Structures are given as structure tokens and as C-alpha cells.
Image 1 (tube, rainbow, N blue to C red):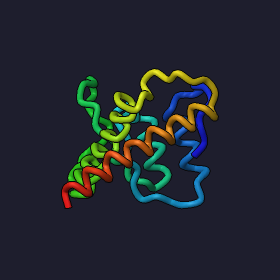
Image 2 (image 1 turned 45 degrees about the vertical axis):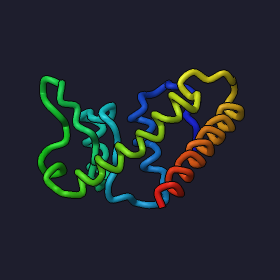
Image 3 (image 1 turned 135 degrees about the horizontal axis):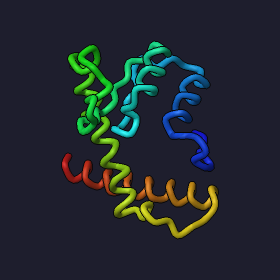
Image 4 (image 1 turned 135 degrees about the vertical axis):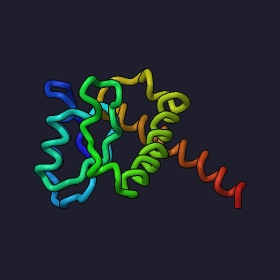
Length: 132
């Protein structure tokens, strides 16, 4: 997966470019509240992808995801899976040391991310073995 070097463009614009560039055609796209914008949801729908985006309820106009998406059981499943994935990134930020990196450069940061993800997997495997 490519690393975005600098935020010259909004992150949702980079995501749109990556969706167009991929060799496969996903049916759904899960994302957090930061992607709940009119332009991004419209662009994803134009690519024939169903956006499973966490709704941003504090906006004056309400969330950009309407009942076409939220009424299906797949949307609720997608939100539960997204929560599980976000827990991993939360662990990596708080315990794994990714919130404030001590290394500079993409190679060192990538290695630290691999190390943190490996540590999480070891912790998870011990919990799974203890449960069985």
C-alpha cells in the first residue's frame, strides 16, 4: 500500500484516486466520519461502490449517507467490523508507540509500524490460546 508523503490534497481526494487506480472493483467501501462529505460520497457512488461510511451526525444538514445504505444489514455488519479494526489502530497508537514516533523517514516508520503490528498479533495470539 502506498504511503502518502504529504497532505497536498485532502485525504478523501487521495482515496478517490486510489479507488480509480485499483485493479479490482469493490462493492462496498468502509470509512470513518472524516469521509462523510457530499463530494466523497457522490464520487464513491459514481464508481458503483456502496459507501459504508460512519455518519457524522453533528452537521447542520445531517449525515451524507441516506436510508439506501443504512437500512441494509450489511451496513451494521460493516460498522461492527470497522470498530474492531479501529481498536487495533488504537492499540498501536497508545501501547505500540505510534502516536508520537521517535523515528524519521518512511523506512524507519514502516519498520516500527510492522514491529507494533507484530507485537499486537503476539498479544492477540496469547489471548486466543488462553481462551481455547
